[in-house]
Length: 320
Image (cartoon, rainbow, N blue to C red):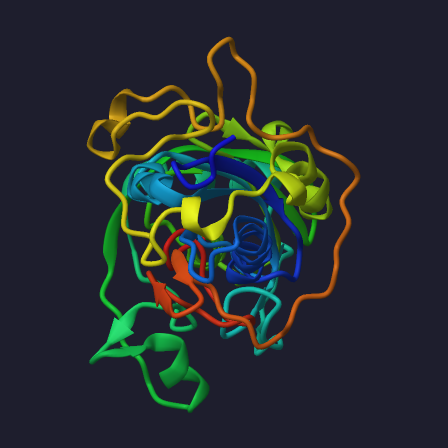
C-alpha cells in the first residue's frame, strides 16, 4: 500500500472518541513510519463522541476524495428516548423537561415517521458547529447566549421503525449530507406530541461502505505492521514534500485522479475485489483525550472543516 499516493481506510469509530482523535491516531503512526513531520490525513464526515460507526479516513493524495465521500448517502440506527428533552438533543446535556407518553402507540409512531420521508426542512441544534457571525453555535450556547439558526432543506430517503419498547424507540434512517439525527429526534418527538432525545447513534453505512467493511480502532497497529512495517518505511528523502501538496488521489491500491473521483471503484477496494482494510474484530474502546476536537482534515499544523469539541460536537461535516 502507498499511503503517500493515497489510501482510503474504513474504521468503526469507538464510542466516546472524537473523530479527530481517531484521525490523530492514524496520522501520528503514519508520520512516524513514513518519517514525515507533516502528513495529510482526513476523515469524510464527523461523528459525535456519543456516536459510533463507519468513518472513512483518507491519507496523502486521497484526501482530495473527501468531499466526494461526504456527499454520499448515509445510514444510521438511532435510539430515541420519548417523553424527555435535553438542550443538546442527546445525552451530552441533562434532561430539561418531561412530557406525557401515554397517548403514544406503535401505530402512531409508524405513521408519524412516514411524514418525514422526502425533502424536509430542519433547524440545526444550537449545540452544533454551524457558524453564527463567525463563531460556532455551540460556543455561544455554552455561554448562555440565545442562538437562532435557519432551517435547511435535506432529504430523508428511508426511515423505518426497528423496535418499539416504550419509552424508547429505535429507527433506521437513510439520509442526505447535512442531516442532524439529533435534530430529527427532536422533530419526531414534537410530531408525536411529546419530547425526545437521542440515547444511541450508530452510523451503519456511508455510500457502499458498511460496518462489516470497517476495522476497529485497536487494529491500527496490526494493520500498519502488515502494510507498512517500520523497517520498510521509506526514508524522508524518498517521501512526498512536507507540505503534503498533491495532484492525484488513489483509494486503496488504485490511483485515480482526484478530479475523476466519481468514476473510481468503491472506496477501500482493490482490483479483484479485495478490500484495503482488515475485517472487524471485537470492539476495544480506549479512552480519548477529552480536549481533542474533530476536524475534516488535519495536519500537525492545520485543521480544516467543521470542528466541534467532545461534548456537543457534530458529525457529517458538522452533522450527524
